[in-house]
Length: 213
Image 1 (cartoon, rainbow, N blue to C red):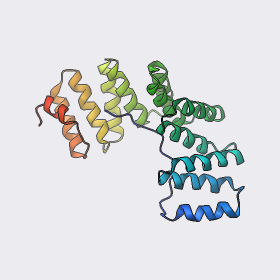
Image 2: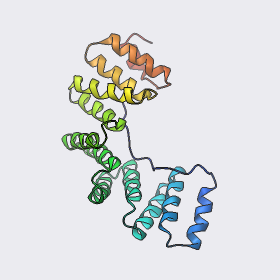
Image 3: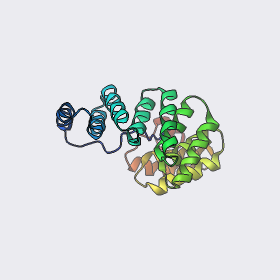
Image 4: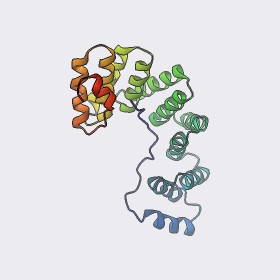
């Protein structure tokens, strides 16, 4: 199983020449917060994360209310393994707007990496209060509850994620694993087949456990 993340920059531009175009705009107008923000997005799309962080931070300095920049900063820090930094940036964003779904999910994932399970659960449940259909929150709760041995809750959240996003192979894989732990290999095989049909790389050892390899 893999955590479902909410740390991908929002609205990454598709134009392969976007970085160069935005660099020219920023050079001409260095106080343009939106241009710095969009350049940060474009750089993140190229996985140039350090430069992307610089641009997001510049955008935030020029326009402190640009919460999307702070959320993207938290997501990049999460991806880089700076969990304390991720939590700090997310909390600052939530001070401005306590209804930021991405901030709650990023905090939850960071807490998981820090071994702070209950804080992670609380963050994911807060995300679900903001949006009951938040797939990432359901998937992460499914993983956490499975690790805690609370199999019924794991099945509940993974099933909800699969229902909400029926093309999400990870959701079906995780649901299959949860059913296997519940001793229900019939359903485990059923959802494994769903995951495979969606192209999800189901672990070979799990397939052997189910007699499917």
